[in-house]
Image (cartoon, rainbow, N blue to C red; front, side, top):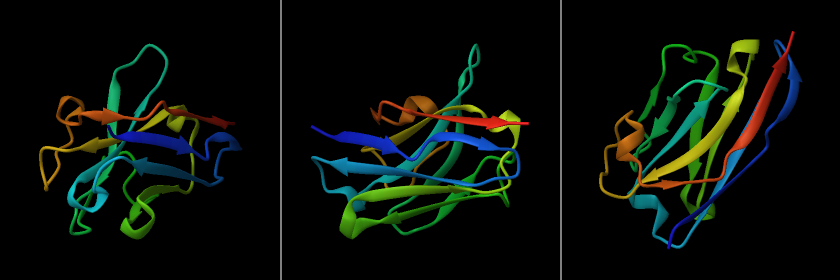
Length: 124
């Protein structure tokens, strides 16, 4: 059984930075696509970034140039470095794993394992 545990969320002022971490256990981590999604109150869960087994990455337009996703297969971990944070980045951020594809998608429904989420709040 796969378990994903996020950490690193918190309160930060606009323009600040945070680094989210996701620790994975229970499966050979390096084979799969990993992603970060976020969900603001009253809104759908949206794609933020993903990284495939080969290190290729994809980003939502809203975070390109500000966020960086990375992974450390030796530690079974994936990270999201968030710079130049804006109030509209405020959301619960979720780590996700797609165990069915080596090249992941941006669709929520294609990721079959999820963490519990970590709150990121960006103040003005």
